[in-house]
Image 1 (spheres, one colour):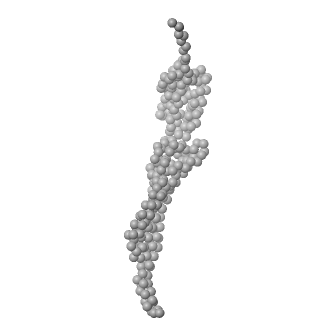
Image 2: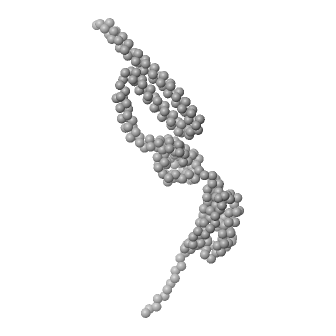
Image 3: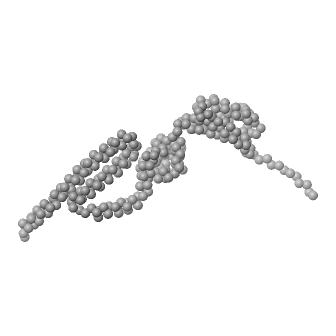
Length: 273
């Protein structure tokens, strides 16, 4: 057995590939160190720009892994491996994974849109995807809301972004509106005075925009008033219910009738011919 022959082959291959391995390892470790530094710098810039923390963390992961893939490809090139076929396989695998996880990816994309365009924030009371509640958390896959009856609901972000979104907390003020029906026999001017007095006595009602009390409809069994006042957003629920109670109690005291739907039936006698 010619040991010198094998030692020469080992020396030959060691010389030929050793430098490539060292270069590949150097590119990988130095590149990985550089990727961490670049990612940390970009994260610092995004935080200074006051971007949402969820979006910052998401973009941080995307940038890190994208740059790391570039480093790995560069390391493989240094080894002399043809990365063209590797990229083709990677692309096919990415396509397959993307198709398998299309719902999850759509939720991630929707999360980015929610964070960028900010139709609502954590703490807002919103209506989206046929659900109303207070937003407790916005993560990459779902929006978590607490309903008024204290249920926790997780809604996929894609369902949220593809629906009409009503944000009840976005504006500092809200309008309380009631339709109040009174009898046709009541004095409409007096009813209007009573309703305006109820408004004046409530300090939570804002003077601007100006409150409105007006006849809006001559209904089948009642004359209907539109009753509108503006309040601070935080006072909306209390004012809404308090006004209904106050109107009913005051109408009872003032002798104003709130009619209920009724039908008059007339009997006509037909004489036999």
